Length: 180
Image (cartoon, rainbow, N blue to C red; front, top):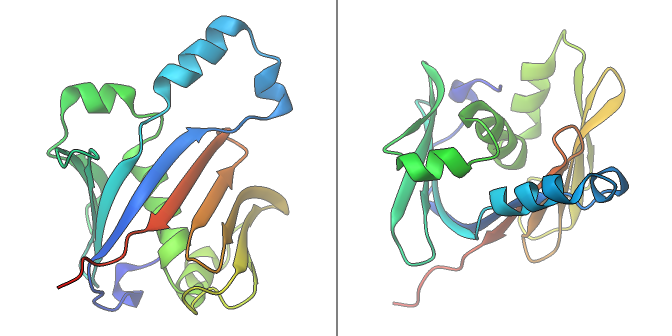
């Protein structure tokens, strides 16, 4: 995980977050009961409010009706969910650490990720100018040369993160600020 100190204070970012199972050939071949369980574990779209600073990263997740479901916190004490509704925690197909790492891969500068991966089997390969908003680009996260995650951003700012190891896909769509 990149060091928090590499982050600058950011403005609050609002987004729509979708997490679902990848529709891979392997998952298509699983038993119908497994497929039904996967579908039940897919989360409905969520509204996310993200705030990053050199001290902490916080992602508040809300239902589309505005009900607070949980807060992801990553700070010097690690990654965890706070203020989480028990029924929401039961449905999450990922851990706090999994989500915090993927948010970091999407939002943190290349240099911070490169520093975090230095001396390890992990590597970031970047195509295009990821740090330039609303420019199509791609990031690949590799471990020992094997693709662990693929992040693709389009010109509208939508990011699709595919994680083949967990057969999950996370989509982050930016929400525009409300008009004054």
